[in-house]
Image 1 (cartoon, rainbow, N blue to C red):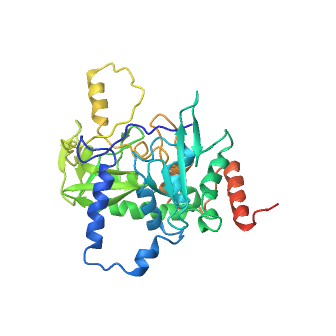
Image 2: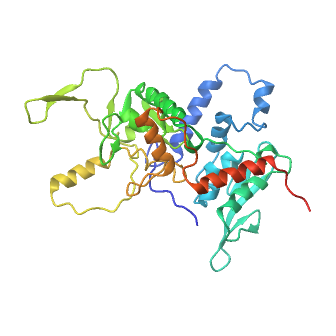
Image 3: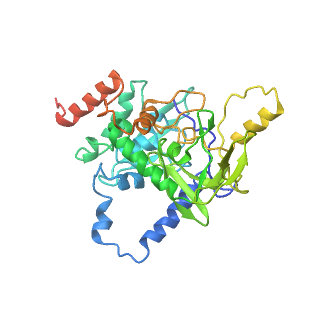
Length: 355
């Protein structure tokens, strides 16, 4: 069954598509990084090698997936799943391997009464999820190294100590930005927005034309800070305000979303408001950033506001709170995940049986 992305879009203006933020940022940064550099022969051939540990290669493949080309695919064939297996998006419903040059088409055929998903023209029967994994694997040529490896950038593959270190690194990068969004955490405003963002996988990317960009380190969903209510993070003395008591607290001035930028929203079941003040507060929170709801739907860190956190998101939050001091990671959290991990390892070690 295909999954549908929630209405969470970012764009430099309301007339552009949801990929505009990532595409604009990528173009600017690529032009900046290539300025004055010579493209060596090694650089030209780099993308034709299989390096499952190279996250830059992985991000390059993942960045090739465009909504008009790869829209509303089954979760097992998401952009993240395909990029982890070495595929890049080269056209509508079309995948290509830069190593073995194999091509794979995943398309919904609607000619029949109910319709059916097709892989290279062959119907995909209702079968366990492992069949989908096998299609991405065996779609490569027989001797392609991507048949036996995949990028392991899911939090379940890292220890608590590694997760905590990554959270700390991302938090430091976010604090270096000029602005940060107001972050929603547990139904309230997060006391430390940088930590809340970092523990949900978000990292700083850069500033272009006065706009601060940040993205998910796993699914690469990119947003602009100024699309949300935001505050400065520079070392300035915040204004002092009274909370009605004898004590006073300090709070930075909140800036509203910049006009002309799309403020992402996600659909939730609205609760009846008994007082106008409560309704005004709810409308204000609609401009805050939800660190788990604004990932791509196929990201392991994605979670709808009305649902419980998934295994990956919960582990990262735990690593943040314990600083990775609880010892090594327990590995996959369920028996099913342990079994799947074992089967994959055996598949790599043992040769295929040929009759």
